[in-house]
Image (cartoon, rainbow, N blue to C red; front, side, top):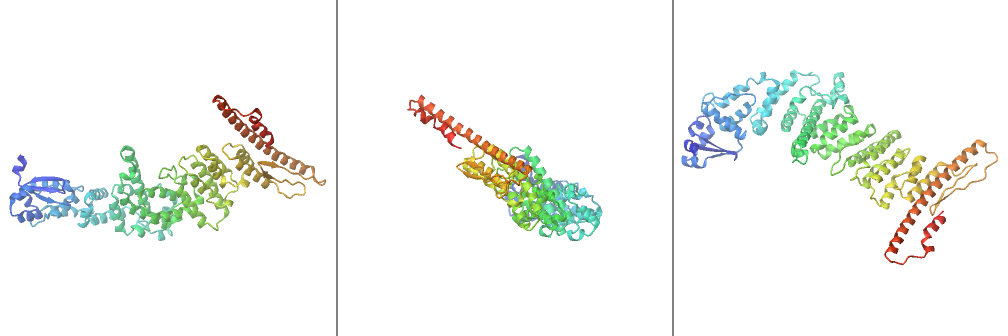
Length: 556
């Protein structure tokens, strides 16, 4: 090639690109390259094989800028966008004053002398430019220099009393208590939050380390709020790009869980430290939704769930409807863990809190019941997670069971019966009990048990005026009545008569349901006999074929 004929030096940069240059031009400004060239005994070897440079800061872009500087007789336009890159390249190649006056390293150092007068956006832009060679920039001291200037800008434009305030000291001041309102956690932001969201998680980690607030050292509400805002923005960016990129299977193809996990843990540690003082139950669920996608440690997740579980009585249905993983619509395992924490922590708490959580779980059961992937064990886990006294009425649980059965029509009789084990029949209302008795998805045995429990729990078995005994034997229910005492008032007798009529009516409804069931069996048998006739098989005698109808009259 003509270019190769003119140039006498080949430089391979990071195994990505080869530059064809002149030894004399490059050696004039780079002490490192000049030394390498001199060490070669034969220039023909350099010309043929070239020089291999690995781990060059900035890669191809950085070396191209250096080449332009050399071929432009030591001149290049330096800006806040390229000064860090040029400085690292000059430092790597040894472009010092020993080789040439006003060499590249000297020019970049002179540019940094005006760092104090840079604007906020200049500093952010310069930090952003370091992301592709961050380790080398950090080793040159650039990151620390820029970070110090960044913090100075924040301090200049913020109330110094509230700047990165400690959680322990801020509670005593009125201004800090205003900052710690739970409603402000997820809605408001400080002026510098948005600008710093463009920086990589590694730079943000360096920012926190500079402040001594990374990991378990984080005790600042303001920095915790910033981290949550930063993580929320990263998650939203990931989600929007995932919708555009059809080839990506999930958000974590675009962002590294490892890079963000340290920040997520730091945010959680700050939240747990301040707890209920700064975060409402709803905000704690908001935090959980944000950080769970960034691979937080088991310890941090456990501490956050413990904090949420202790306040579960303050949660709403929308709070606990957290999207599920591994195919489930909702994260039922999370709710199970939260209930266990609540029951364990609130062992001696008022019954009213337990009942409040009980009502919440009834709503949750009805919401998750239609999920086709929801296993019976998970449904029962939620339904049976609270003690019996946490519910005054089990109508909500029954409604959830009915929805589950309707959404899972292929369940066996054994599975349907197993699902009903979480019901306390004595705490079913009369309307729910009647609906259960007529429900074709409920096993007849379960319906009889419910009716029996309803009768025995409604009227005492010892009464001077009236005694009702309910017996369940061979699917029969019988009512026994004593003679009325002469001393009974007419009003009491009237009430007792109405109650007796109601129980009798329920039993008649049960009998009617049983009749319908037997008629269905008879119809199926007739269909089978019809097939046998068509196939030429001998048909049983007429009196045998009528057996189901005869059984129906003897069944009660």
